[in-house]
Amino acid sequence: MSEAELRAYERTARAKKMPLSEWVRQALRAAREMEPGISADKKLGAIRAAAQRQYPAPDIEQMLGEIESGYGQGQP
Image (tube, rainbow, N blue to C red; front, side, top):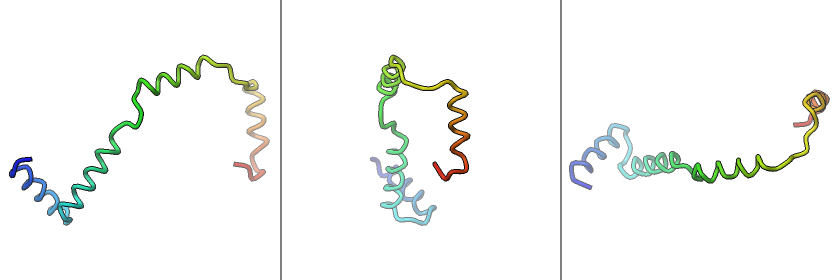
């Protein structure tokens, strides 16, 4: 990194009233959080694989009835 770049980072940290080291830690955390954990191809592959399977489920009226019957019974 150039001296000019370092000075710019120091000015930014000073403007936020924090040491450069803390500003760097926060910037690195924010950059890490922006990175996807799993690639889009892997996610799409998992969705496609799941879509190929059959899962047991009642019809919508039965599901809604079961949901409604659970209200007020303290169940999550």
